[in-house]
Length: 185
Image (cartoon, rainbow, N blue to C red; front, top):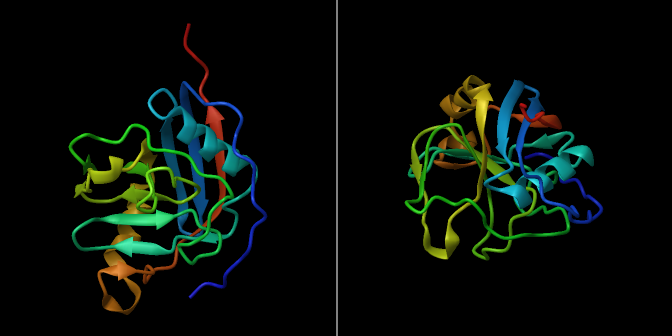
């Protein structure tokens, strides 16, 4: 089990982030590149960029892998416990009405409270259907390169052989960078 780390609470971002953004999630297993959907999920993308700029996820383990029923790698909690948060929360946006999340989807993790989005997110590695009761889960991007990294972690399964828990193949976020793409004329 990774050692728990504490973080000072952060202030919520002051603006939304419309437009197209890209990101690089550098991990100990390689880089995962993402496209972020600022037009569909502007508050979520603004928060993701804000946390990246603050270095919130530096040396942060991906603490949860699910291999049965739903197929996600969950990251974004610097404490490694699944209970860490940046000190602010926000609501759901851009959740699919049918609850279907294809491979490569980048979405926010949350509790039962629909206004509990914070810093934790997940990457879907196989077709997954999640409950729509309570509002669903915010899709804010997709993986454009590096799904092979997530797939390799998923293939190794859960530590101890269960269907939901710490990945057997440790993966940690080293840093995250977010860049706004220039609009084409």
